[in-house]
Image (cartoon, rainbow, N blue to C red; front, side, top):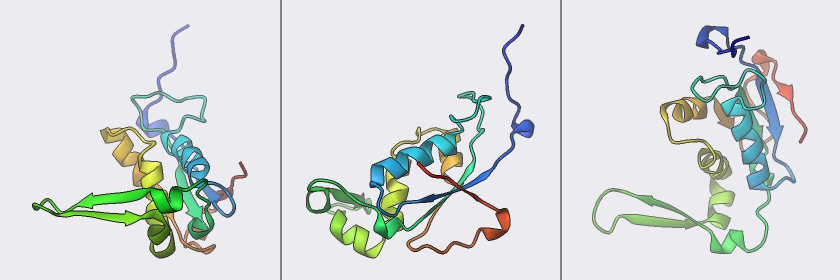
Length: 142
């Protein structure tokens, strides 16, 4: 018996909704990363992009444990000398919580062509409303 190899045309992509309210940022991001890669499917192969679409709602209600709100920073650089910008996570969670969630998921996805393609299937929203009702996403409890 030979090993089954999934073909990109055979992949059936589902839509999932994760509610981050009351959950830790890392717990939600880890579950989203597994769904985006497709590691929850029995047909998973690391060389084939077989992940699903993930919608994360209530990103503003995600929890950071310990002193991460005051001690953790989001860094970005403009490319110019002295162009390093640092933003503390309490400011980031107050102004752009969906970016904080996206960055957490991005850190858990491999930095490859497949990983970058998988990250395009992530949608993060600040509040409880999202615009993907027509896709009939399945609410996932974790």
